[in-house]
Length: 254
Image (cartoon, rainbow, N blue to C red; front, side, top):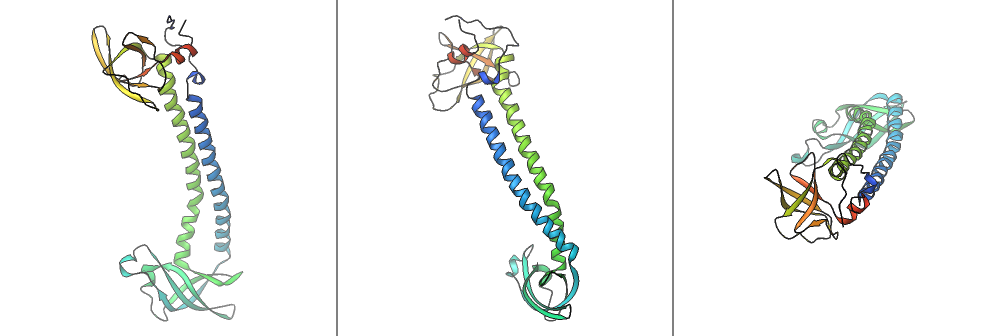
C-alpha cells in the first residue's frame, strides 16, 4: 500500500466523505418538516388573524354592568385571567352573558353593578368581549405573522449553519488541513459511534497535542503505531483520522 496524497488544496467533494450525504439529507428532511409545520401554522394563523381583524372592524362599543366576577386564587392573579358575567343592551335587546374573559387584576376591582366597556359584533351580539382584554389580544395577534416569519428564518439559518459546520468539520480538514502522523496517547477506543481520543504529533521537533476524531469500525491508515490524520485548519487542537476506505475513495491509496 502506497500513499499518493496531493498538495493542498486537494480536490475533495462532500459526497466523497462517508456519512456526510446522510447528514445533509437528514438536515434537508428536518428543514422541510419544520417549514411544513410552520406552513400549517401560518395557514391556521392566517385564518385566525383574518377572523380577529374582521371582529375588530365590525365590533361596536357597548356599556355593560357587572353581575358577578370569577377570579383565580389571590396568589395566582398576576398575569392571569378572570371572567365576568355582564348584562348589556344591544340593538334594543337585553343580553346576559357569563364567562367574558378579562384580566384578573382588572376584574378584582369590579363590584356588582360596575360599568365595563364591551366590544360587540353585530353578527354575533351574544358573544361580547371585554374591550381592554380584546384590544390587548388583538395586538398580540398582529405580531403572530412576524413570529412565524422569524421561525422560517431560524429554520433556514439552522440548516445553513449545519451545512457550514459539516463542511468545516468534514471537508476542510481533507482539502486544506496539514496531514500528520499521529501517535495516540493510548489504545484507540472501540465504540459504535464516532469517538475522540488524545494524541500528539511532531513538527519541526515541536510536540503538538490534539484531540483526534475517528470513525468506528474503520481501519486507519497506519505507519507502525502512528495513524494518518488531517489537522482541522480552524481548530488546530483537533484532527480527523483518515481511514483506509476514505483514503481509497479520495484516491490517496495506490
